[in-house]
Amino acid sequence: MNSAVFTSLIPVILFIAIGFFVGRRGWIRAGAVKDLANLVFMVLTPALLFRTMSTVHLEDLNFGPVGIYFVAFGMVYTASLVWQGFSRLGAARALANTFSNALMIGVPVVGLVFGEEGLVTLFTLISVHSLILLTAATVVFELASAREHAGRDGGVQLPMWRTVLQAIRNGILHPVPLPIIAGLLFAQTGLLVPELVGKPLQLLGQALGPIALLLVGVTLAFTTVGHHFKAALRIALVKCVVHPLVLATLGWALGLSGMPLAVMIVTAALPVGANVFLFAQRYAVAEDEVTASVAVSTALGLVTMPVAILAVTRFVV
Image 1 (cartoon, helix red, strand yellow):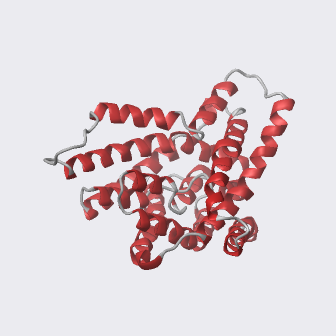
Image 2 (cartoon, rainbow, N blue to C red):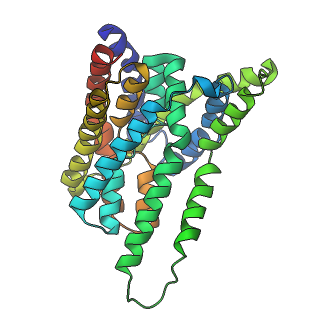
Image 3 (tube, rainbow, N blue to C red):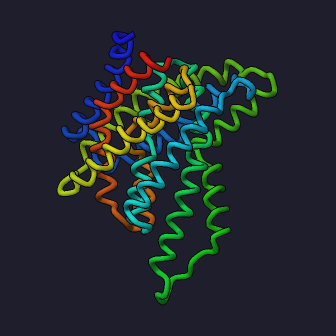
């Protein structure tokens, strides 16, 4: 099993390293990174998500481990917010401490280690991951912003109910949850995806893992950590070590085991997701620190992910 785990992780490390080398050599320019990201998110991701979920029936889904994941998220997020203080900076750091890169790194890793059954479990989480977590984060950021701007002149704050509704709408009309929901709805009809459509979707989905990992490496090549290293390292340690430990402890306390819990623990051990930077950018807070934390946590994840996978395959699965 250990040999199989390492064999599965070698392509992950290799593709990230190749992407880093390509970026350093200048074979891909920094301005092209956004275009590659759009290709991953808008084309390859929906193809893989829809095709995988188009054969899954709702009664086969296990939401228990997903619930544990959200409880662990809530515990670490709340503790981080209390420790950092209720502000935009505290909200940014709390989200960085807890929001995983479940798509660009999680999908290839889980697919290689746990196969399609593991991907179904991961996609069950992803289907509500962004919707619930990013909606909650939006509310916290808006409340923190309103508190910081209390008493100041200028700037009209949207009513909270409009903020929440907008966050929910954006969470559903998104290239990640939408194809999952569409695939699940299609599966419940009992129909099969025609080969004329299914084969192209399969080929596009197979391209997601390599291109996403190469993109991670390229992004790292253009990221400057600088004097934000210490703050980024603190975030990376919470994200890649504390978060999965809290989740594993909860699962152990509840007597859970098996592959679905293992996938949740590995997902919690993933590096900081890119959506955190979008929040930092939108609310104009800690942008450089969050960018550095994505890079540092990705580097740290190359150590912590194999450890987490070895641990769960030995003690959980």
